[in-house]
Length: 169
Ligand SMILES: CC(C)(COP(=O)(O)OP(=O)(O)OC[C@H]1O[C@@H](n2cnc3c(N)ncnc32)[C@H](O)[C@@H]1OP(=O)(O)O)[C@@H](O)C(=O)NCCC(=O)NCCS
Image (cartoon, rainbow, N blue to C red; front, side, top):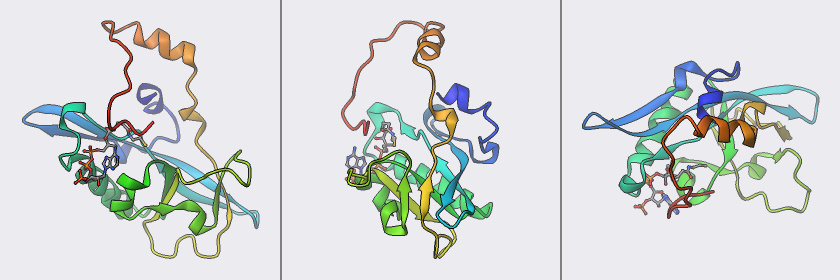
């Protein structure tokens, strides 16, 4: 997915980050532009973020939070108003994210009574979403085709697919 997103027109080149420790790549984070389709007909430009990750053996050492906070600071410096995405409040809540429903923003294609606690939001400009209600759209680039993923993976030495502790999804 990361491989595909970097060529997507919605990809934000200025917010494409890697984290290194002792010359070794240990994490990455990236952002995409998208919109909230506001109930009053406006399109509110926002950012979405991720995937963010820290190499497995260095998780829970504070690197993820450091990378996240740095990335958000840079996004704010570029003037972006808000960031919304799917994630775990246990991690992102520590960096100022809250449930998007509290801002009046709904997740696309989700039934009204469904659990939307995975859908998070942070304003980078305080009050940016004031007076806005509407539906957030995940950028199309995130919907990679499984067959394309399999084909891409074949270009690398074989690895066993695992779900590791700390993996949020
Ligand atoms: C999510 C991820 C980037 C977090 O990075 P990290 O370096 O492990 O996180 P940090 O050490 O900075 O965590 C800061 C705090 O967030 C919370 N936190 C982090 N990961 C958590 C988890 N899996 N469950 C609950 N709380 C978590 C903790 O309170 C933690 O502080 P503590 O370790 O003192 O308790 C990392 O676990 C990862 O790469 N996961 C796999 C990929 C992924 O799921 N990415 C997110 C997609 S939305």
